[in-house]
Structure formats: C-alpha cells, structure tokens
Length: 137
Length: 188
Image (cartoon, helix red, strand yellow):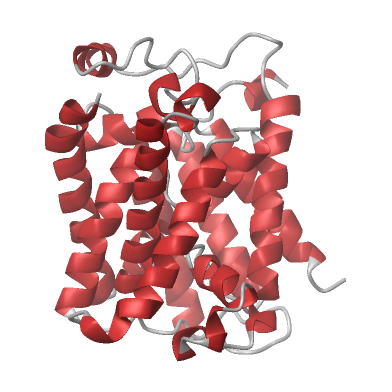
C-alpha cells in the first residue's frame, strides 16, 4: 500500500510529460536548435519553483509526511564525470529525442521501438558499471 | 475538458514538474529516473560479477513503481486526454519543420515522433535498430557516469544550486548541440 502514492505521482508525471509534448522527439530537436522557448520555459520554471522548495526543506519549514527533515543528498563532485558523462548523455538525448523519463512515458503511448532505446539505456548503465574503474571521474 | 485535452503550455508543465519533485521529497525519496537503469541491471543479476550492481535493489522499489505510474500516465494521456481520433500534432516552429525536411525528416510535427526513427519498419532495419540502441547506450552510460539525467541534475540539482549539476547540464547541451547541428544531418 505504501507504494500507491508513488504510482499516483508517476501518473501525474506521465500525463504532464505527454500533454506538454516533452515526450516529442521534435520538441527536443527544436530546443537544441533554439527555435522555441517551450522546453526552456518548462525546465526554467520547474527549477525556479524547485529552488523555493529547497529553501523550505533546508530551513526545515517543510518536512516529510512522516515528520523527518528533508535532506537533499549532494551530487558527486568531479569535473570529468559530470562533463564527459554529461556530453555523452546529451548526444544520446538529442538522438533519441528522449531522456529516461520520457522513454517510459512513451511505452504507455504505445511506441514499441522505444523498448529498444530502453534496452540500450540499460545496457549503457551496465557498461558504465563494467568500465567504471577505467574512466576518469 | 478542452483545457485538459489541448497541449499544455510551458507555464503549466514546469510548475507541475516542480510539484512532482516536491511530492517525491515529501514522501521521503528523491526525483531521479536514470537510477532505475542501474536497478534493472541489479535485478537482472549484474551484481553477480560486478560489485557496483551489488545493491539491495528493493530499496528502489518506490522508483520502479514511479516509472510504472509514468507508463500508465502516458497511456491515460494518449487514450483519454487527447482530442478525438485525429493524430496529435505538435505545433513546431515552421523553421524547425523546414530544417528537418532539409536533413531528411518529413512531416515534422504531424505526430509526436518521426517515423524515420521510431516506426516499426525502421526499428526492424539494421540501421534503424543501430540508431535506437546506440541512442539508448549513450543516454544510459552518460547518465550514470554523470550521476544523473534531466530529472536528477537539471531539475533537482540545479534547484539545489549544485555545481556538479551545472557542469552536467552544460555537458548535456554540448552533446545535444553537437548531435543536433553536426551529426543528425549526416544520419538521414
């Protein structure tokens, strides 16, 4: 039962990704061509509101539903990790026209070929685990 | 109902995504979708020969349930929250449509995705399959190397004013711009 809330939030996520056309390959292409404000507006407004949430979390003015402090774990430091990993991710994002979230939403839309992309992404995560120690971080 | 069935504007979508992030924190977890790819590897038994995947993946159950919800949300939006039987068009910048026609992708915006990449016929061709799987590998490898994807870095990390996330997002854009401006024109 404790998982139902995550399912419902996931549904909200899937609907907004669909209805705002974030799952459209074309919207990603358009973004990287700087030909529309749409995606920048979405990410920008989400981040602006996110910053306000973080302020309340940090000052312990908002706690979890169980009354615990909300601690946002910091991301791992490392120029190579973030820059090189980021570039590789960006190449894939612009080719697939989908980052991991939209990939799953597209299954629900009935796009069979996205399963190949998701399989590839899982394989990519596996390769990262395999070659991790040989990569610069 | 028309308010729901028409495409949602950025100023609706951005705040809803902020609410999604907020709710996940409120429920004691953290918004980050590419972690699930590692969970898949762990479930598939990758931990048997790579320590990196030797995790208690049941603690990530909530995230698997979240993406199951995302799949359901995609289904609901496509089948119940869209106008009639007509194909759903994406109102792109006319310049984008022209640019895509120039590199070999026709009828841009007539549907959500280009047939040149996502049709079943393309998927079953050698080149098409290779493109799909390579795109996936780059996304999965890159996201785990960088320690996050658009959700974990661009939304949560930037909101939390984290330098690693800023560097990652700059990387996302370097890669995305190179693909869009220089590599995509060579592919089709």
